Image (cartoon, rainbow, N blue to C red; front, side):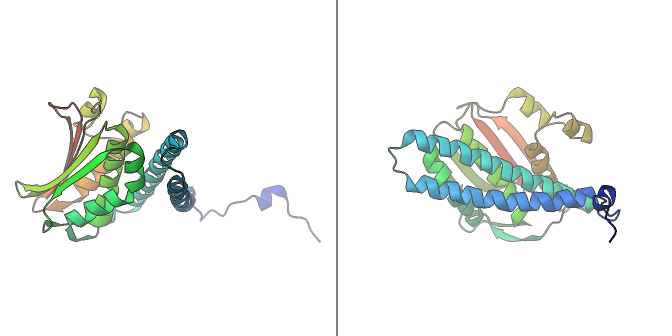
Length: 238
């Protein structure tokens, strides 16, 4: 019986692309992280409110796990966009229901951070956009608003100049100057490679600009409140 050499056994077929393997691996890691996040939430609910130190640590782990999960989702979506145009499935969405679902999915984190989250959305307000993509975008924004807000986070959705605007505002320290500057310039491959912008900002703008209607395309804007100094994120969809 002939023996298989180490080189032969380690050979990877040429038709298997490394990027495709990475995409599958990222998908598996994302699923595992989702289970981990659920376990953290269950653990948090099992401790009494008096266990402040333990809950604070679980809170920190929950936030970091959410960040990792969001980043993996973004990388996977960007991979799909590199293979073909970012898949977009536009349909009518009731904005209030979307925002309510996002807030509810972060109920444990909101409670642990002792943050007051409010939403001002007309229950009849609906718009046409990709629900899954916008959900991911707004979810990431809200997670960060809860993380950096001092005591409150407010959400608004309204129509302005024939565009849907979803606004998230907190009363934290606000966006740093470098991030405000980066939000107004064209993002390039060089910016990403040099680490001059966060993946979340790039991904948010990509999702917004993927939505187009009657010669207009979506956009995001970042600013700081002149009253509280907190951050204000606006998503505009035509």
